[in-house]
Length: 403
Image (tube, rainbow, N blue to C red; front, side, top):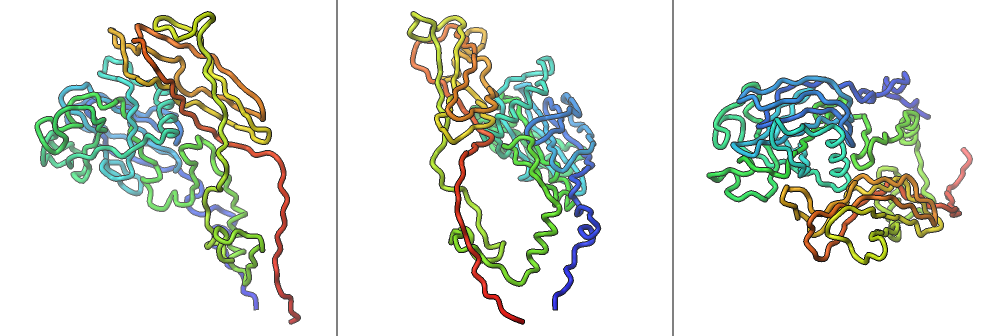
């Protein structure tokens, strides 16, 4: 006798399970930063709205509140004045409380110098560009975690009111400062005044501020930008129906290791072993009769990207960063001696089979020391499409019996 399949009430009525709406999530809390911080709401790929701009206010925290979707992120763009002490402290609550020091926090060191309240604050587009680069480079890391908010040690010999003592002061340690690291004295890096590759971007996924409200909300991977994965509620019903069937027959041509046992939970997933598929890159410089890069002046240069394959298309190829090696050479006024403009987010929408595309850039050289240099291009590709058809067959052996 066949039993009637029982759907959960929300599926039986055609409604999405709890959390499927992906929000809104209401949050509130207190933050403190020495010295400056801008608070943004955004996606995994960019900031979309500035919530607060906060300057150093002694030991008094700033209360923040708002609402977001489950897939949003809270971003805290912070920097110091390079003297005294610096640190970031926060306690945020939705239906769950998260404090700085919890492992769910990430930090990105942008190495874009901002030194005071008089210096122009980072622009929203500038912050978003750094987030994109950080995502593609996988530059996000864990913040450096220091003392608790309980005045128990140095360098923060005070308690920030309104934030629980379980919260801990955090910052980024560039490793470039001399002196002792926390908790040893006397300088307590990275909390002593210093440019630790600032400004810094701290981020927290909004769904971490919830218990179960966002459990059924599928969010895009940060490296995939804002593409929301397709989510078909009808497929949920079919999957439940599948699990109720008495027999499952695997295809005879199934991969023995990957496909596993007949039941769906046993199937495994891994990257396919494919040959490396990369585009070709070319850098063009020097107006005839020049044979080398001049060490003084401005000149137009070109980058060409070619697709050498007849059955492949590259979509969304983006050069995320162009960097010189050796780098760090500067002129007397502190400007880079050798640079490319623009040096990031150079986009090629589509490279179809057997085609090339070029873009023009500007190379600026100012009293560049003679020598050998290398220009490094880092890039990402949204999708690689393989064209053509393959045929195959499989079968499902079974025995039919009369009742």
